[in-house]
Image (cartoon, rainbow, N blue to C red; front, side, top):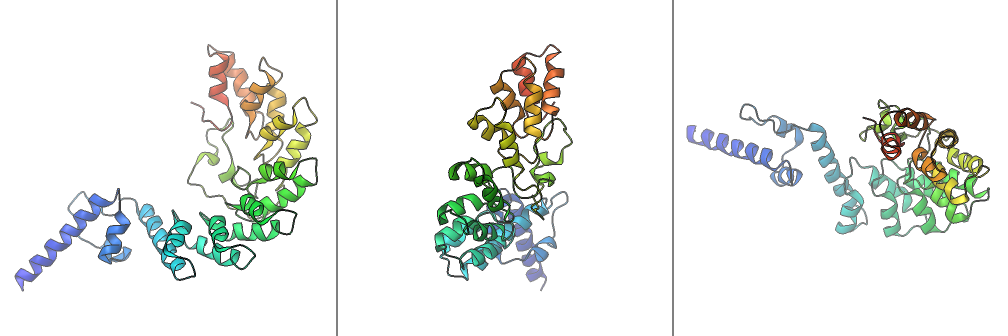
Length: 303
């Protein structure tokens, strides 16, 4: 009995040591092969100073990928398609999204492509909305990949009612850009003057609960195109805009020694005139114009 106890303790210690060593690569594979649940894993005895789950969130994410794959593989999806759908999944949302999308006119592969990385059924709901417009199925998928809700589809409708072409409207509203339904969501914010802006946190997931000003980027484009900016410049300036901040910033910056193109690059993604004000302050010091632009450009942290 004593020998059996010692063998069990030795095997447990070896497994714990292997899990610790393997957590940087293939950790979830090891755990799955050992058929150990996360709860049981947390109770394994460890050497002092060693934590088998030092990043509990990382393990949870890995387990979410596995759970997603297992759920997807129980549908009509093949093993390869299930792996494709659930790559980097944190929960079962891609499967939920696929189940909704596949009930539409989409093919199996199109539904998979639409729902990769989904955080909810937003891409599928967006597709259903976009598919009521002049867009072809492939165009609607392209518009809605990564959507959290129907925001990109609503944005497209508004954009296409202006002078923007269909392709330009898709480019302006594509959910893979900065804009994604809720302009007040801090997770969508870009840094533009405030280093404490929560939008700089890559771990802040966008959560879109409404469509208020869901086409602010279109309004920004329309206003910008009435200035000295060309059509292409107006689109670049306002892509992803959540208000008229990029244009306000541009107008401020363009009153300095900057060229129109330099002012545009400074202000893309801005929520207000902060990047322009930052440039003025920086350029009044020993910093060169290029250094001041690099220091203050919207979307880049200030140091």
